[in-house]
Amino acid sequence: MDANIDTALPVASAPAYAGNRTRRAVLTSLVGQILEWYDFFLYGTAAALVFGGIFFPIGKDPLTGTVAAFGGFAVGFVARPIGGVICGHLGDRYGRKFVMTLTLGTMGVATFTMGLLPGYGQIGLAAPVLLVLLRVIQGLAAGGEWSGSILFISENAPQSRRARLAAWSPCGATIGFVMSSGAFMVMQQVSGDAFSSWGWRVPFLFSAVLIVLGLYLRTHMAESAEYSRTSSTGDIAQAPVVEVLRTCWRQVLMVFGLRLGEGAASWIFFAFSIAYGKFLGLPNAFVLGALTFSMVLMIPVSLVSGYVADTIGRKPVYLAGALGIVVFAYPFFTLLETRNPTMVVLALSLANGLVLGVLEGAQPAFISELLPARLRYSGLGIGREIASVLGGGLAPVIATALLQHYRSAVPIAIYLALLGLVTVITTGLTPETYPAAARERDRQL
Image (spheres, rainbow, N blue to C red):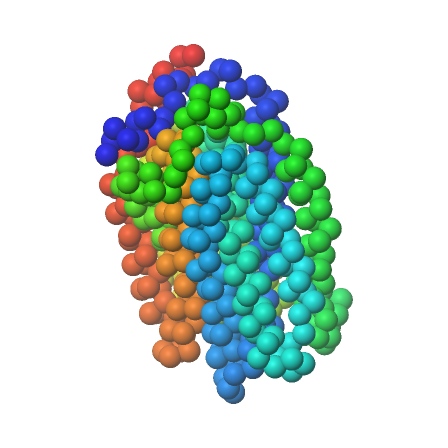
């Protein structure tokens, strides 16, 4: 097992990496992540706020429609492993740039079309069917975006600075969420009572402007340095998905386990927290505002986490975050249930800002270094995106269903803690990808 991992790591930090190229890689990846995940997160926010009544008017209990809306949310995650496999194959065969441009354009078209869809009251069953179909397209694009984005940074960065630079990629996703929730907050104020008829559509339609900017940047970026070297030597895998499952299946399982608890925590701490806030009777605007603040806090925490991961190694930092999921699962809901504004902000800040911030800062470098460059896109796409379905995609659906049945957050806390425990155990079994000897070597260069 360790031998496969060792071959994936560079022998030394590469001084040949140009600083300008690295900075361009970070900027291009960051902006693309912001725009792509702004689109992807719009559905999660709208599912918690309005989609239940507009596209899934089922039964008298509003939670029933929300469960159905989050079901469409989960379908997007089910599509992500398929997108991960397809994009992984294309990314390892034809390069990171091609796939990253493709995913951004696909996501933009699907999101813009969502903003034009009539509701159930206008076209009946066709409305939720078309919405879910577009969500599937979003999921296919998202399945290849995250892996490509972190690889584009990490494959242009020396190992000694890889974690702190690759941490900018999830920061881009965080900014995308902040923009999406902020857009809904603004439109709730602007449209007032008309929010459920046309106000919610504006953030979806506005995505067209953002995607044009993102496509311009990605069509003008250079291929990643490490992939270019692999391509120049002819060491391109002809069937990367088959090869990675045959030769690096242990590493793929590690990626899956490292992602499972983090994915569940991500979507429960922010997507489900909106629905839970509604259940508790908290104002939507307040919950979105507190959530936005907590996500902004995640950005500096992630960057510091990446810096620490470059200093003491990836594993101890990630283990701290994984333990945070288990420890904070129950207190998170206890603080929310106080309905006290200060406690609600504290709960979301500790969950999203601190716990997830630590995980997001260390994860990109940690998992990308587990696999060799020629198979890296495929390995990450499979392991991470299957975990995204079983952890992230199903989490809001399961959490809402548990809440509907038990009218209590205790079962949800237990569920989250168990998935967090899987990530704790996986982290313990995963070898350090930037060991002390390598860190000492790089300090002397």
